[in-house]
Amino acid sequence: MLTYEKRTDRFSGEEYIEVPFQGELLTEHPIYNKGTAFPEDERQSLGLCGLLPEAVSSLTLQKQKTYESFCAKPDELEKYIFMLSLLDRNETLCYSLILDHLEEMLPIVYTPTVGKACQQFSHLFRRRRGLYITANNIHRVDDIFRNAPFSNISLIVVTDGERILGLGDLGSNGMGIPIGKISLYVAAAGLHPAYCLPIQIDVGTNNESLLADPLYIGWRHNRLTGDAYDAIIEQFVNAVRRHFPHALLQWEDFGKGNAFRMLERYRERICSFNDDIQGTGSVATAVLLSAMKIKKQKLGDQRFVMFGQGQAGLGIARQICTGLMMEGLSREEAANHIFGIDKDGLLLKGMPMSDEQQMFAKDPAFVANWHVADRSHITLLETIRNAKATVLFGVTGQSGAFNEEVLKAMGANDPQAMIMPLSNPTVKAECTPEQAVAGAGPHCLIATGSPFKPLNVNGAEKVISQCNNLYIFPGVGLGALICGTPKVTNEMFMAASQALSDLLSEEELKGGRMLPRIDKIRYVSAQVALAVAKEARRSGLGVRADDEKLLQMVMNAMWEPKYLPYRLPE
Image (tube, rainbow, N blue to C red; front, side):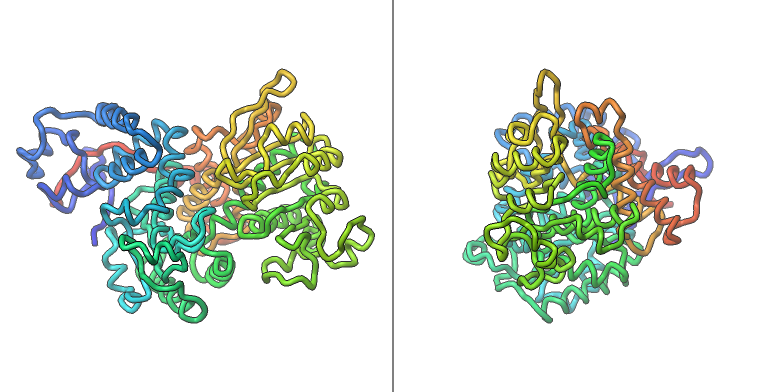
């Protein structure tokens, strides 16, 4: 196991990297490889003579050549494969290129293209990356962790592949998600790739097409559940604590039945969070805080209807509750502002539901005076009308669910109704921005889960903000790591939401923008990280440093992908 570390010459002050090997091995390692950019002195001192062409390139020229090759690829999946191959050859070049073309490349290295890549991951598999923990090797988990590429791991992103995006159970093919999420951490928050580790926990799959595929790379077994599943997760978490006690663990794309359990079971034992639950909730709340500035109202003035009660819906509802309670409401009062709609309609006490949904289930007496056709199945439209909803979330993947009648009902309740069809990809959005404006009126506020172009409304441009978790999780992770907190709290995510909303100018808010431009993502992540560190300090969980020192720590931790000089150990 290697240790990656930037050093400073005690005499010259020059920053350099101490490389653990030389010669051909150096050109084969993606963290250390510079390709044709190895300067002449390093070619001689590091045993590279004759291994590279004569011309010494620069990072700028390498990016120019590589971008030409990227653009020549015929479709998004081929571009994904190209970028993954580049990542396996030269990580510095890869991330420098991504930062130069953020808006173009983020949809390639992650959503929506990563979904297609995960569906074909076994067929695309070229070179191993990260660690694979299975039911067959969990008894050797310490040996597995000793095979991690670097000893100073700070971030682990782990999935069991059960709920990959909106695609369901993809088993071991789900490894594309932790790999992609780490790429976003590096690009957006500047975590060095050597400190990041993707992990796939392979407990089988119930996907029959994968089990029948001779090229499937995972364990050919039905998915483990119950005590057998829990035992593997327990051994995994304990191994993380033994080998990487200061690392942040991000749970990613676990099924609803396990995601909430894992989050609650381990959030006090290990510094961890679930982006599907907490990250989604936090970025949606940031949009709401921006909307409150536009409307000049408070969260407590709103009535929220949540169409969908899975991880995303419940994560948003929980974070809104945190915001309402910070405005002075009790937990019960906060929950009464939120109306959850699941497959059987409005959640009512006495219905079959998960433990997580119970908090938002309404007592039948609460809706006794509502005008509805069937009290055992209160519809979305009936809920909007009777609850006087002012904010509508869609997290179901049901295209067209927000029809004209639903949207008109929202507009009748509030001319500035907040419409948030958050399902992605675009074809699964509950409505389009055009449909929202046509139904709820020209003054409605809109944020979506998929990217949409601005609208022209009454001669003015209306920006459609994409509710992308990228605005939150990299900064939260960075902030948690630099301040040394032992856990990530709901209040830290609320601080992240507030910091994100506060980055918008009055002019941007007037134009309907409720999230910053994505090309500012590094600045956004730094400010989110600072807010998280300040909240950790306030709550007694983080380092006690002043704001200036905390910001300095954040900036020092953000890696800029560029080539530093190399030296062999003395």
